[in-house]
Length: 194
Image (cartoon, rainbow, N blue to C red; front, side, top):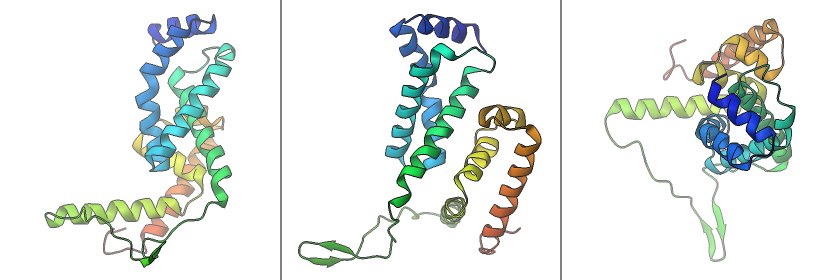
């Protein structure tokens, strides 16, 4: 953990509001990017980050520096994301092909086509969409582990510390998540050669 983080944490633990605000400023963008990769929704990512910093504010007095502040932050963001997903389970998904009911009758949904351009861009977009759909079919803890390892480039040790799991469990669960993702993506052989 950096000396700057230690100083800010110590000051914030003593009630220094500006130190806590500085700490938030240092980590807010990083937390948002991670939350966005988990949620793929800017509003939900903002809510998850806000929840996380509220929890951090409440729990900071108990932070002992046994792990890096960033690792602790990832754990809290992950937990806030999983808690929100549990609360939002009852909300239903809407098909992009479903018509929209308006006061004047049914209307077909219209979507802006962002695939204009060379074939490579269209193929990349199709792969990204298939990847997001595949991740969306997986349990949230598997999504989080895949994002932490492959997108955020966290080590097994950091993931184990973040999720409070033994390193062997992280390795086996991450391997199962990769196998599950590969199985889902194998249904789109035109996009992925597995």
